[in-house]
Image (cartoon, rainbow, N blue to C red; front, side):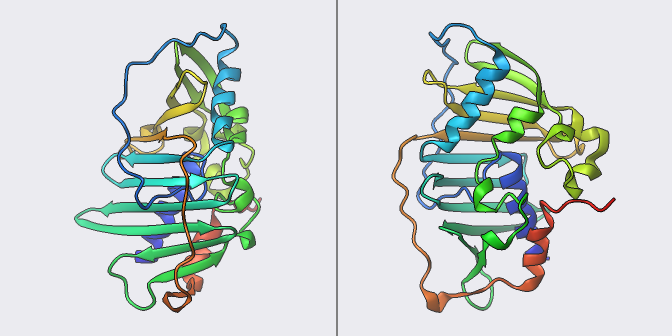
Length: 257
């Protein structure tokens, strides 16, 4: 059950906010949200502006803070161009709460379950995952999702509102997305950008997918931060169990007709 919980949390995190392997160690606390400021940039197409803001995540290192109702909390820092990430996640399942640590160093993903048994860290070569998998290095920032799936986007100052039609997503043939059916065609979102046009907050209303899912909100801050992350000592690392690899690899696989 612990493998399923960690795998599900990891996939949820990377898929929903469009970042694979984003993480923290001493990421700190996200600053309190301030009132949106109106950009001095001349008015353009809201969809184009929103897509450009999401693509800003590809260009700089930053810190992230994410929550999903009372189920998942994550904080982290990552350097997409440098292939580095360091994250902690807390997952709650009823009265059971567990904390996980995740590091990405190049193409190797390391995961640690707090209070787990055996070697502290599990390792996985993420380049072996399916092409559409969120943990595959080339998908570390899935900005194409917003380019293809964002619809009905409006803008007021530096705040955007719209919907995601996941049937238009680049990996819409994924088994998980196909299973959503019509529920996945109308996922409301709200986003905020700073005065440089960088995405600073993204909130998805997941209740359309499941009544108890609630909202998932990701905040991006401290752009340009230095990300220091190293592989755990070799003596503390063991290959990821096949059971968990199978669960992780299932995300991004094309559903059979």
